[in-house]
Image (cartoon, rainbow, N blue to C red):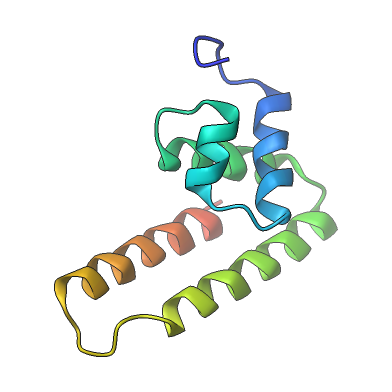
Length: 98
């Protein structure tokens, strides 16, 4: 699967796995993407193809998931916490991009 071009089915599978609660790292492993960000991009491509009502439901669920991740950050402001905050911001930005 890693040598196949991105497809509608693979993108939709990424979206479905994310809705099941899988991390983008786990989705990348299952769908044989090179990186978690590739799984995130597939999720977002599939999301953009969803009807408006389904898309809004998924966006709301994903924003809730990202809010939980953000609130679990390390309170001491160390570098790992800062990296996590940047990653969450990137996920949020890609999610809300039109």
